[in-house]
Length: 217
Ligand SMILES: [Zn+2]
Ligand SMILES: [Zn+2]
Image (tube, rainbow, N blue to C red; front, top):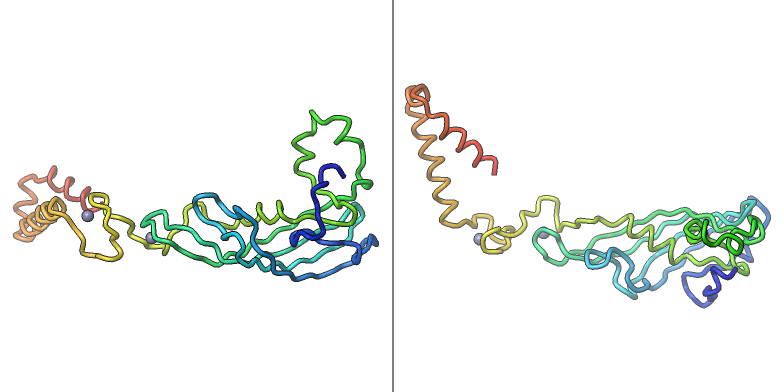
């Protein structure tokens, strides 16, 4: 109980299970749109802006030891493409399932008797407190898991020019003189190969290997 002392029924991410009751098998479905809490997402990469709507679809099921919550959160996440650094938005759908235990159902005195040994374990456990469950940490974990660590504006985003930082998507033909020279060398090689097999036979292996390597880039 002490662990969840912060639960407040006015918090939109706190749900009341009184109506569900404690008879195992009882089911309740709930839909609620809440304002995104602060820092919902992967900090500095992508996330749901504070206050943006998060649609929650929940299924509460009364089980022997507590309340099993299965749900989906939908929202729009905003971030920045890791390749071209342009802002991006994407639909987020995060599924989660979590058991909230009744404090008296699994009361082996662990929280008070062995705080050292099971501190980590207890931190992960969620409880029903005075009939209330708090979904904020569950939502946070689910959202982080559902978001890409390396968001891109599109799968084939070409990113930025490594030499001048220009956005390559804006300018597909973007190039610098150094690149020109390499292509000229390749074209020259292609031309000489086209002249016949003589050049090939005369041993141009180093140049060919060089050209092949550049072509891969
Ligand atoms: Zn991009
Ligand atoms: Zn450039």
